[in-house]
Length: 125
Image (tube, rainbow, N blue to C red):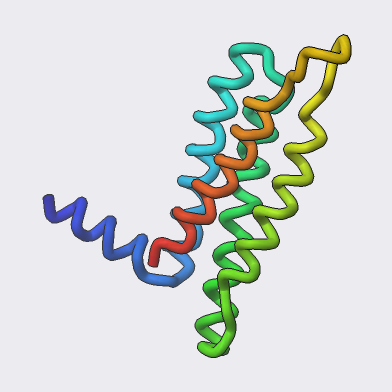
């Protein structure tokens, strides 16, 4: 139990160890989501989800760092731009086939959700 409390303390602080741990956990979470999608042969597999998750986490951590330097800064603006950018990326995975079948919606939603999970994980301090 003491180990778990210490781990929570490390993660909630904003230092080099917590940043590295958050990025590693983002990599693992993105990899798990991507592995499931890749097993089913979907367009966005493990590499895509890892890149999205780690990139979103890094962006959120930069926002936190900026807020530490200048407390008047609004860090939610950076996260909002990540969501917009990921929405654009997800839109590229959606296709219409045979003028009636839409594919790629789950992939787009998965990529978007991976980014939001990562932002939530990074900003949990």
